Image 1 (cartoon, rainbow, N blue to C red):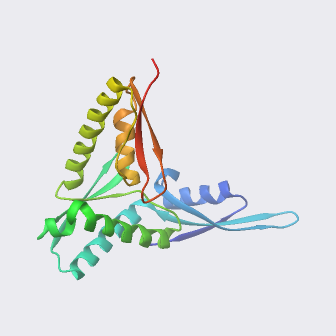
Image 2: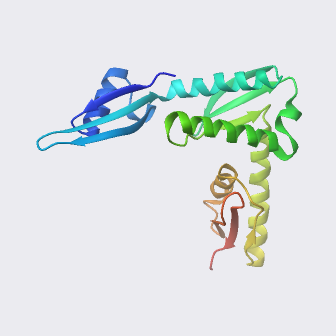
Length: 202
């Protein structure tokens, strides 16, 4: 994964240089401000830039390597869902790769997140899925959220869901964002943060 350095008279100038040199938009670039040197008459800002497509490919290759070392034979497909890259993995042992309640898949996601954080110095959203396990899980979470929302709307008693990761909580929030009878709030600290579904006042 190639990292590019640019120096400009301002952050905006350095970013513009990156956009021209790499022939891409700012949305497709990952930018880290490295140093800012202010003189009496001049200012210099140095940035490090990584093209997002290179990072997405880096994650795929890292995944293939680590899973091969673990003894898996895999095929990985990439697609975007709401501008978030999804890595769909097909392996010779999907159930083991997923683990009980997705435990092994979550652990793999955590490892990759730490590797990415070390590489680009900031978090990067991505989804790991194994043979559509996450997609099915997402449908189940949406179904659960809507069922509980209906109960809350009728009983007027708020309900706290089990702890979820940020991705799962976002699914619940999005599923109920337009519901006129209930609203959602996140509460607690990681890794025990969860969603509360509350009734709206009439």
